[in-house]
Image (cartoon, one colour):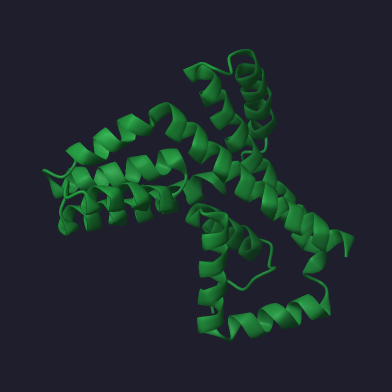
Length: 208
């Protein structure tokens, strides 16, 4: 039971880390990101790259989608460039997920230490919010390490294996679980990182 609690708390830390990064970036560069998206509609290639870049920064394709939807409802951009931006957002999520699943254990304490020092000393300035982003990235990396450590002993439990075996045999159920987690965490990146990490530990089968 304690091991399961450790796993759930690690997942919560992952969600919180992505939230901190997203809110920090939006506070510092929110207006700039809106301007970038607004100016990217002239060419499909620009719209695609804007989707990749903005999503990589805010750590959430959901946040990018909300920005794009607001532009569409206001009549600032049409459906076609909006869809291209969202395609880029999906690629941005995949790229960030790949980067964050590398062994960056050495970077986590450094980001958290520097982030806390910067945020506390210059909280009301832009650089203070960037320190907040550093804290979030450090927490994401730390959470992924904790998930691996917590999931390893659970993989040997027969009850847990039975649960995930049933999940792997039901594509619709697996789809619903992923969708619900992404909605709760407000970050598809968190859902992708969690799934990739659990698959790497053998906790969850890679193919369903």
